[in-house]
Length: 233
Length: 170
Image 1 (cartoon, rainbow over the protein chains, first blue to last red):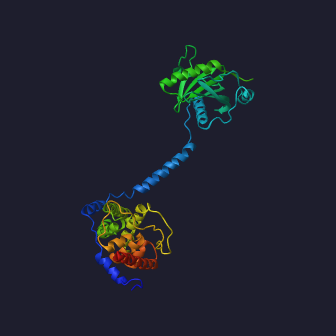
Image 2 (cartoon, helix red, strand yellow):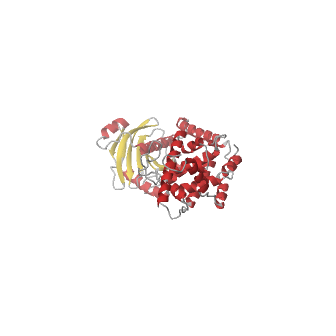
Image 3 (cartoon, rainbow over the protein chains, first blue to last red):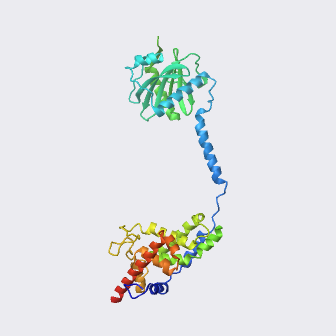
């Protein structure tokens, strides 16, 4: 019995048990809860370990890809194109290792690459000059100039020594009735390839569609006219 | 416990859970939702139920936790006394919210007084007195020691008496 009230704990408890309304679950609720209880199709026991194993295998494959031996093209020209495209891709993803301003750095670039530029394309409203750097591809020292066009395409102009280098005749494309560079492709990139004196020249970009190739031809003409690489003495 | 057995055993407590949900929410649609949600969770996490323990207490615990999570977040918080319940004159954290338009009317002074109790007090009385649960099971539902349950029952009855006295005077 509480000191504060005439009603005892037991009496109050009894009132709660007897006087309070008792609510019963409506039939529709019983039905919907019953549906919830319907057994759902159990996930097969083998599914989780299989998925885990597949995910682990995928991760291992991804990790090991860079260490897998590369299948290199037998043709030296194709190998060079692949190397130049790889350099272009690297510059596209990470930027030039040490972009230099030309002509200020030209003497240093010439010393490093063994290639001089008697003149070069400094850029215009279509192609903006980004930078230049020496490169080392397929055991050859060379030079790369980077440009970016108004649509954001990176355009790489690369020059390497040409020994053992030949242009595949079947890929040649006439441009402005003056030049016949070869249009090659590798890894989703297009490359103009031609010889200029004792040097092999490349222009690489990700311009692969028909309309892009027309622009790419213009870029070739711009760079071909305005840039004159020579073997440094 | 096999899945079918578990479902069957859980559904036996539907009326008791609905009754509890009605006294917590005082609103049939909200009580429906609360019970539905309780069963959804119970079935989804049935593997966590330890066979041999009290299924009824486990279901009530899920229902109350669901209620606290989804229905009480809207209410303001305040400092709690040692037994986790606001003091008599403190602004009440879990005191009965305003009646909503869909709320069921209270028919008796006892119902009205019960509605005015803070949720912790209402719950402890509903579980211990109305549902007749053992204090250990009530403690499990409320996630507090048995001593706290006893203290809350005492204080809940004190406050219920006070409210009933007020109604008598009116």
